[in-house]
Image: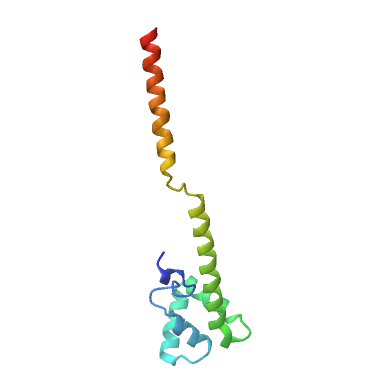
Length: 118
């Protein structure tokens, strides 16, 4: 998976950037950009929900830390899931192929011997 896709806020919308959203929440965004963001919020309910959810934090200065922690937890869970998936896959074992070929040969040999002596 692409590392950029694993970031929580980077996949909100292609037109909106994480820094722009955080600056809006901290009231550090210029008024023209803030007005543009508010238009996007009116048009896109997902952006509106994201802003509402992030604005519900008491300490807005720690939002970046929360986002970083969420991204870290997401990375950890994805790595754990990937490790479990790799564990479940059948590992390539040459002895397995040898055993299958040997069994097939024994079956063919047994069939030939039965047919020959009957």
